[in-house]
Length: 443
Image 1 (cartoon, rainbow, N blue to C red):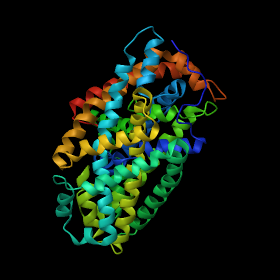
Image 2 (image 1 turned 30 degrees about the vertical axis):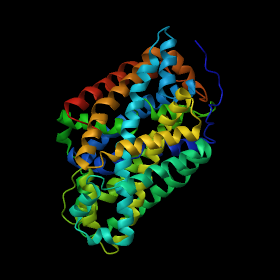
Image 3 (image 1 turned 60 degrees about the vertical axis):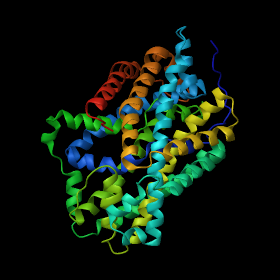
Image 4 (image 1 turned 135 degrees about the vertical axis):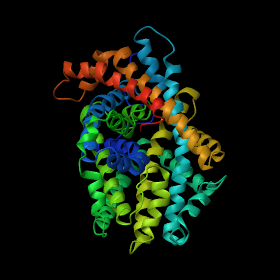
């Protein structure tokens, strides 16, 4: 077995801890924060749901996210190489095949996600031109989501992602996230501030924050809070491993993971404050999923003074969230193409972009895309996450991963961490996988 030295990978590494954290936050912040989190908070108990959610975020950030970061930094490669390395520490083969499962999950999500971000780009231009607000919301959405209904926007999103990745880790991923993520937070703060002054918005704040403690007795409240927290952090057994592989050995992995979890939670809360009070101000249904963002909110923007500007700012923010997530999904696939297909970086990135666009072209029709995303997110991704948790804490083992986690730390992690990782976190990932199938998606 080949030991992995403290070397920098072929794609370089993040130049700073801040750059790494912002890139990781960019990967984690996505559509789930924007169109599902606010609805779930209100539906499952307001502040009561939030207490459970915050607890799961802390646990999954401390053990799950930090474990994936450390796993990547130890092996200096993506899931195929990392899983293979872990299996070889036990004298076993086949790790590469197991590592391909979460990789397929990332590619599958990227294919569907690129279509959705294409819709967002179309809505951004529709907001700037005024066409979106002049067209009935359901009609505008159906125009975007028909058969081959979003080809140019879909293509532009893939092209933008490819161009960002062509710059490499430091000049591409880190540089763009250093710009985009602070702007994302600023834009959502501005929208939340504007929404606060809408007549009737107070009902939205009540929906979000008044605790309904009786819902704590409902198992589904805990299940949905756990699922939302788990998937919000992108603990999928692939994307965060690849970002971890670009992290300097001097950095405190756990501190970076907790900061990523914190900022991801702030993003979700800002989305809630920007969306739900606005929806309630106009007595509309705060449904989750695509209808909230692409049908309900355009109706709201059409009734707000200066709604055209607010809509443009909103869809620009969402575009940023979508592209930064896509960058991570593309990167884990491109690194695999570089390492295992021996392509140079530019060819690898182009190959991933071509696959994502060409496959996505035939599922632009919203029902097809929805089915595709259900298969990937309900079955493939949770199973990949379970594999990764077992691979890190049971196959590789807490002693080996603990050494990596302690690199860059002033105080070593204790036995409580090891117990939590092996007997709490791993069990919860299995539970997430099972419940995801039972409930047809919980994140």
